[in-house]
Image (cartoon, rainbow, N blue to C red):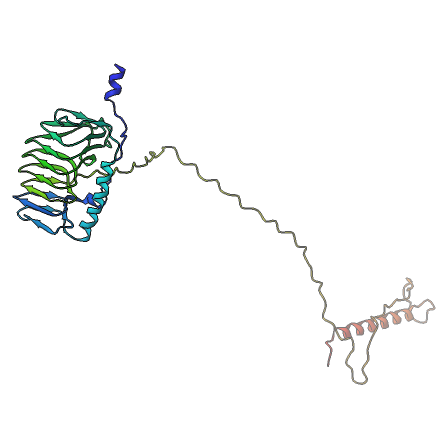
Length: 331
């Protein structure tokens, strides 16, 4: 039971796809000529190089660009040669020479046929769940498909990863459904009603079409995986803590009290006559002690009249000195 599960489970592709370079943009590319009959529809570029002839468009329709012997077609042919040699040089995983492709199932790998290969009925290519599975068929001479034959893709196999390297020419039968990129050394003939999900690329010979539908197979580039965005949280976001502002201590400046300086006064009194300068402060007048005995009138011997007169005289001198100091200086 376990072995059965492992056999059918997805497996990583063991082979790299064949790089087509600039030939990747072409659905049809020939070396000598491209010839069409009927309302063929080609989705992708159509070109020829080194030949120059493209005929049958219209009535055929090209949903792309036609390149007849221009620089684009020449470069595509150069890249086709590289791709052809790459496919032909891959190590063979299984030699199926002499076996009909029809009725068989192939997984990722390289399969070789020493001479010709024939498809009758349906061949199945199983990707085994791997979208990068690669299928390479190395055919020594010709590839021929019978009428109404089919190439079927299952389990993630892609047409863009199927390569048919043909050593001479390929011929697809009427109303056959073909899948993959044909890389032929010589020519490719697509008969009436046949369809190709892939490419018809001939290095040296012609590509001949007849009422066909050919669609260039493209492997989509995987979109980048988006980075999941976490849902918003219901809890409030923490507020950032405020950074404390450093306090600056200003040293106390001692108060300076300016002394009140009195305006200088001129101690020189202005009087009529010579200038008198009093250099010394007003003298302190000391009064003589007085007798507490009451004054007596008349000629009494105990009279202190003289002391009174001395006191009054001192007061007058003091008053005069005060008046002189309070007068503004006269210049």
